[in-house]
Image: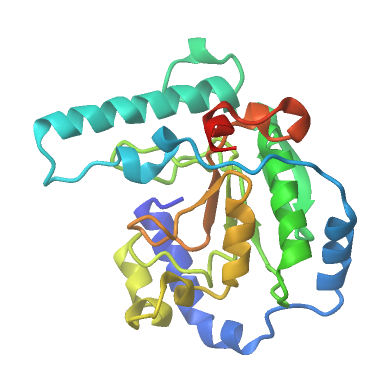
Length: 257
């Protein structure tokens, strides 16, 4: 998601086209009703669920100010998260062990259209993505139409020992040139939406706030909550074995019901 060289080019391109992009309408009248009507009429029954805490970046990422014990504890959590993602979604070279999963995330990925845009995702999280789309179609009263989605990537675009959830095919970026990531790299800070002091993080993107809540209902974590302020990015951090209600409630949610 954010190797410096890749993001610098992306942000530079974004800034060059910013005026034109902001001048365009947020939706296409002929596109939006089609997917919204189709998604709203679908009956995909998913459990509402929260992310598994040890998968959330803020719970395992480290900072120079942390003492030795906290650093060790967070690295242990990070390794637990890598093992879970490997066993569940596939082995990505350089992280975890191939013995944990004989398949790669790319081998477990499928092509689909989401919000009437093409994307490639790990097949295990497709029902959750569909339920988020269904929720947004039914509850969000806006005309936002994503122009671009980014899903599975076969190269890690993180650095400093992290691995992006994009390589597992469980992350979705919506309009990565307009929904900002103000603390990803210094180039993003030149974006007008990153230079102003907003009333809330939701003012640093063109995507409506309602879309965030639609994704979060079904186990997706929004990195707008992270110190990176990555507003384009959602990642499925729930339990993929319990996405559908027919599979029963996620074990980590039973006590809340």
